[in-house]
Each structure stands twice: as C-alpha cells, then as structure tokens.
Amino acid sequence: MGSIQSVKMSLGFKTAGERSRCGNCVNHKMEYVDRMPPYDRASIKCKLGSFMVTSYAICDRYQPERLSGKEART
Image 1 (spheres, rainbow, N blue to C red):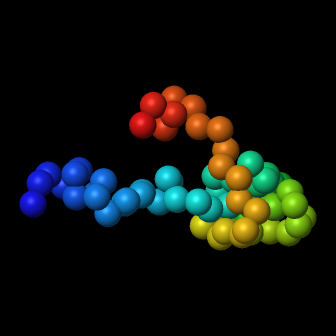
Image 2 (image 1 turned 60 degrees about the horizontal axis):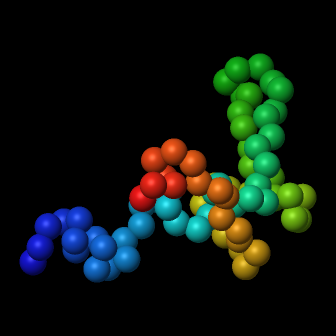
C-alpha cells in the first residue's frame, strides 16, 4: 500500500468539514440565542424550511457554500 494520503484519495475519503451537511450549505443561517451564560448559544436554521437543524444534517436541496482560503486551494 502507498501512503495514508494516497489510500484516502483512492477511497474518496472526506473529513467531516468537507462532507455535504447543513453546516456548510448556502441555505443555513446562524442564529444566536440571547440568554444568560451558559445557556446562550448559536443555532443553525434552514432558510428554505425555516426550522432548526443540526450541523451534520442533510437534505436533497444541499448547495455547497463558496469555499475560501485553504479549502478553496485543495
């Protein structure tokens, strides 16, 4: 076998941040709950359905965000 990198490439391996998911879709919006710490937190809302989602959820209307920086070069 070759290097770990070549094996990953042959398998089509993607890291969690590279996979299709609500957290990197153009149709997500971060909403911040304004409460006293530790209960203040960010939530992700789907712009298409106007409901809360988890970062790793996915639907059939996924559209990738435009990548910038290091992600755009790889």
